[in-house]
Every structure is written in C-alpha cells, then in structure tokens.
Amino acid sequence: MDVLVLNANFEPINVCNLHRALNLMLSGKASLIANGRGVVKTVSRTYPCPSIIRLEQMIQRPHVRVRLTRREVFRRDNYTCQYCGKKLPNLTIDHVIPKRLGGRQTWGNVVAACAACNHRKGGRLPEEAGMRPIKPPQEPPMSALYVFGKYLGENADWLPYVEGW
Image 1 (cartoon, rainbow, N blue to C red):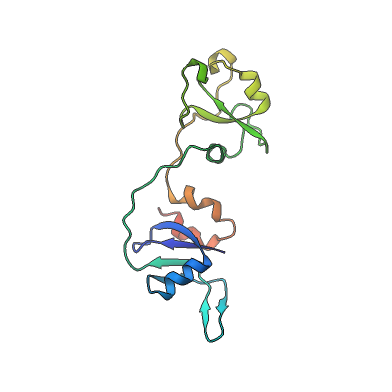
Image 2: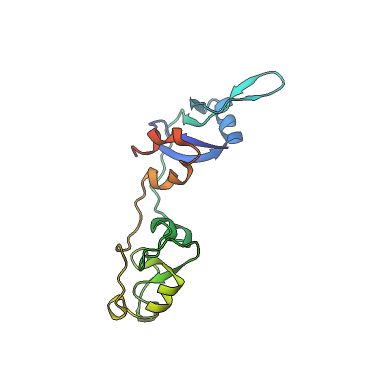
C-alpha cells in the first residue's frame, strides 16, 4: 500500500510504503492525517493504517526536474502519437529535429510517435515531411499533480492534498 508523505507545511513530497509510514509514525517523526484503510493489528496493539501522513519537522529539499525518459515522454504525451493522434500501446520516440541534423535529446525535441508515423517522417524535418506535432514538445511541469497523479487512481483521498501544489 502506498502512503502519501506531506511536509510540515502540507506540501506533498514523497510516496512511501505502509511499513515505512508506520515506522515514521511510531518514532514520532510523522502524524496521521487520513486513515481510510482500516487497521494493522499486532499481538498487543492496533494501529491505524495510514493513507496520508505529515512530517513533524519541515524538510528542505530542492525542487527537482522531471527526468527525460521514454516513460515520461509517453506520459507527457498521454500515450498518444503526436503526428496522427492515435492512442496506441506500442509507441516510439521521435526526434522532431533529427539527430543527424543536430537535434538533441531534450524535452523540446522528442515526442511520442507510432511506428508508422515515425517511419513516414524518417530523418527529415517536420516541414519537409509535412508532419507537425499536434502540440509543441516542452518539459512537463514539476507540479505535485503531475508527479503524484499516477497514484490517484487508487488513492482518490490524496487529491485535495496534491492538486493545490
């Protein structure tokens, strides 16, 4: 089970497992914000099974950027080919400006594309191929909703804590 970890100012900072969350709570480093999952029973005690915990001390951490990976490119593009608009399970990565023409591996130059569109575009510029991406590629925002959004399907109670950041 995943547990949302909030900073002392209620900013979402991490997702941990149930065991780690219980350790943080029992050591006094975190407090329970939302239960909603029942209890964990031991021989002598019963503990609430947390869904959201809040750290007692403020943790200063730098804001990180989303790493450029295949999975994140597909997620940014909503698993949709950026040339034909089809949602397919087997996508490829296309360089808008091909590497052979000086295109770099950056957020602004890579898009998700189906194999057919990637092959049709080939090593040409979008203007030469007559194929422009549906939306211009850019780095995804480092918002809490983007970072923790993949967990919201099974943890709907996290939404009020995630969407405000």
